[in-house]
Amino acid sequence: MTLPVLIIGAGLGGVCLAQALKKNNIPFRLFEQDEKSTFRAQGYRLRVTKHGVDALKEALTPELFTLFEKTCADTPTIGVRIKPDGTHLPSTGGFGPPPGVHSKSYTVDRSTFREALLTGLEEHVFFGKSLKQYTIHSEKVTAFFADGSTEDGSLLIGADGVRSMVRKQYLPSFQGIDTGTRIIFGKTPSTPDFLAKLKEEYRHGMSLVLDPEDASQPFVLFESINFPYAEEITEPQLPDPYMYWVLCTQISQLPITREKSWHISSQESANLSRELTRSWSPSLRAIFEMQNSSQSAIRSILSAMPEIAPWEPSSRVTLLGDAIHVMPPTGAMGANTALRDAADLARRISLAGSVDGVDKAVIGDYEASLRDFANTAIEQSWQGGMKSFGLKPVEQCEMIAL
Image (cartoon, rainbow, N blue to C red; front, top):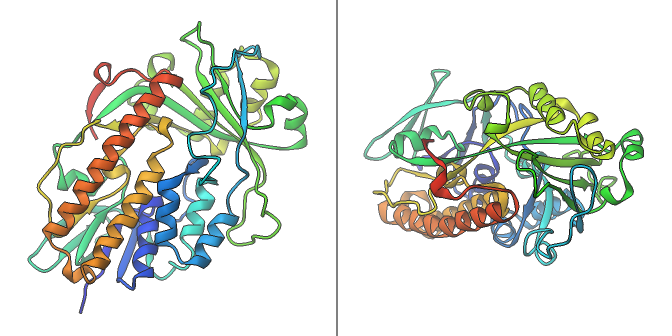
């Protein structure tokens, strides 16, 4: 009997892989450490651009791809560039949605996107399963979970994010970069009271707040998110309209330690965003003052090295997404690269004649392709971050063990 593929992590990459395997009749089981799909804030607006779109078309059935399309938000326009006091900044000609947004791309709410991708996987996904370690045998790999259970599989995929337990065992010396930049992201419901305080010009498009002359001021990107198919789609339930925002600052500007910034609550994150913008114009302050505090979170902008070094492949274990190539979000490539990984890996497993035909050469070719694509995406992300969001050059950042 063919043992299933064991996917560790039910983020976007892991769920996309699960759908691709299901489409190709390849047995799998999907394990997620959270107790349920809505356990924590998953982030908000994402752009799914060409590589992500191509991956979804390959991984999903036509019916599920149509559902994905109908859960997407409106396509963005270019908003305003302003200082914290509301003064307009000269247009640089370079600010706006990332390349490809107006051609072959989608705007998604990350949590809703994930719920859509979980459609039909109910019998295959298991929540509350935190991986501790794995062991490799001649004909299988065994996953050991924190609850004492074990699972045997033919192949184990680490899709478990930046702090991947799979990667820590597979590539124990793997290092990354702490950029020193922290982001607080959040969601402000588009209620009548909020809209009454928000200038009309702030309600449309993707806008940026920055002060080129004051490095102590954070950068803020904000964008109204609306769902054109809200009356048509009932499952998953689409969110009410909201203002998506992300605030970027340096750890040196925060009244907390580096370690504390990795373990801060939603309420503390919300309070920090209000404190950092307390001197801003009233219309802009409303974005933070009227946010849904339970939906705010702080994240460190981390990255893999711009040139990911090769390693000796295994026939039983591999990685995808942030588990191996986390990158700054400033290139809008992180999620798209994870989706691309998932579709590529599923394709290679299928071409091998299902998972029984997967060997070290198949995994090695997949990982080489992953590194080549990720290196370009990481470089694009750094260039975008340095140009528009004050990201420091790589050589000025701190090396860390991820």
